[in-house]
Length: 182
Ligand code: FES
Image 1 (cartoon, rainbow, N blue to C red):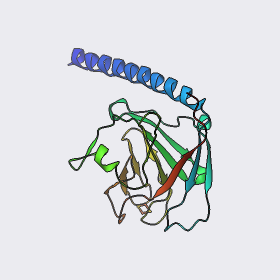
Image 2: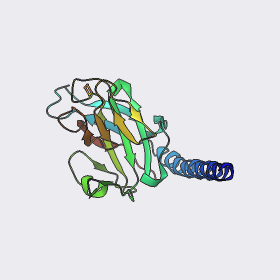
Image 3: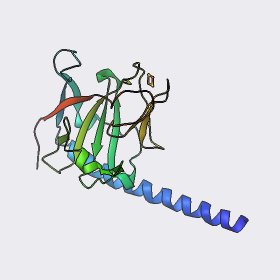
Image 4: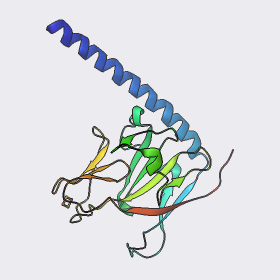
């Protein structure tokens, strides 16, 4: 009935408020980290053949383009069109099951950078769909990448979920360079 709907709406609003507050806390931490002025350089995958290193920019230049999802402990998803990449920043405590496999275990895979400073994870994904090359937008409401062309679907780490794509999104090799001020 109407009372139930009102109650539901109320819950939803307070959940949203909670999420927003959580995000602010997360970004407070990130802003402190960015004072360190860490630089990210990216090296394309062997198969990519794009040539030499791409400088993605200072950590302080990263702006949260998408809200973090508190439950998944995603600190940020950043689109860097000039580098044709998405930079994914995941909290060290991230736990997310995909096909029964914890994200933590997937994160031991190739081309995932573990930040020695706080144990968080960085992943750089090539923005092109591995089906026919459309740019794949990140959908914050589903915390995943969905290709607008033929519907290929990838999780936040770029792992293939469903659709016509033959495999997961390509990951760039990434190294963290720069000074850490403690
Ligand atoms: Fe992305 Fe076809 S190009 S699904």
